[in-house]
Image 1 (cartoon, one colour):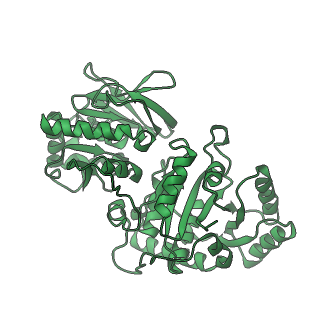
Image 2 (cartoon, rainbow, N blue to C red):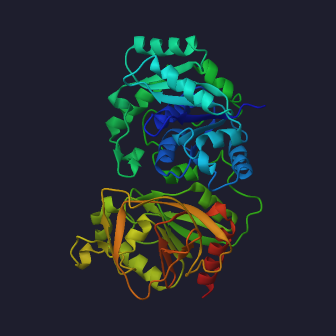
Image 3 (cartoon, rainbow, N blue to C red):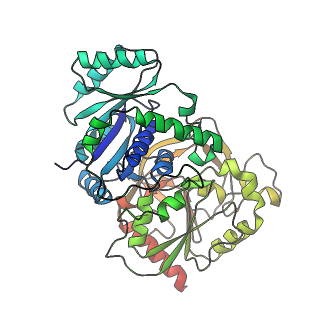
Length: 474
């Protein structure tokens, strides 16, 4: 079998999987290997860290969204012509076994070996017992080796390596020591975006990742990848880094995202993408392009006008609550969005995009300069605990998706709650589990807390294209 990459898995969240994935991506590129990053499960944040290193979009692999055959097809298509993929797992290796969507299930579906990442803080030889338990828990993917994080001295590393060897367990492939430079700041939804670090912090992190990558056992790691056939992206130690999703998407020259069967409708979908709104699945955009929809990026923070000739808008998730003042002060853009919504053309908003379309935070005064778009007579408030978390499957309710066939899958993950309402608000979606409504539809606007994965039912991409066509012709 041709070597095609590895799955990076841990015993649980916080083990250091993202840092190890970044170190692997860095080290592989430095050694001339062109690889593609992937993330298992519903996640928008870890993939942005992958893209910060790899400079191409990080794909989503989730068996809740795709059947195993579809997952395998998407992976094979995206790594075609490259040395393979580096797949970061979700939570612990076996979390999700009950619903068949664990990292272990994904590694088995893709037939990829596993690199096990474990925190060694506060232990040495005991790490071997954890590895044995994980390795023997289920038959399935091959374990390429172990990378220990939060290690101390070189003696600490040797104790771990010797313990694994003595027990005949997968070998130690390297360590990521306890180092302040190897820390990724977090907030309520997870890690901070890579661009939020200061320049000095980003430089220290790159240097630390480079040192960590150089200390790995590449003779074993490279055995999981095909020899280079195309050049790896060039790394620059200075100048502008690829820290935003827009550039990663536009420079996806090594990813065959464009379909030869693309329908040429010449539709234009304005997608907000900036520091406040960047929670997107690139697979959604891929599907939209296949349906004849061109993606046009803009910023609700910095731009004063919407892109010209847009047939619809897509306001994704993110952190609008962190940028409320800047968003509220951009009155020209708020006016543009209000005018567009009033035109009846399709506007689709998810989570953070929904918050932008409300009146704004509950605690703010009602003055015009303290309001957001105000399309919906709602206000939001932030809590310190998750309000909703988990997968969802919905059918179409009201709004421009009303004729979309079947169901589509997605997930919910938010800390905010809404208050207010009005008689004009109608449920945009219906949960298949209990028939309850989700989100709001009013005129041409559909908004909810749901993050939809449109490829789980590609006909919903066609439904959006038809809505854009209708809006253009009305």
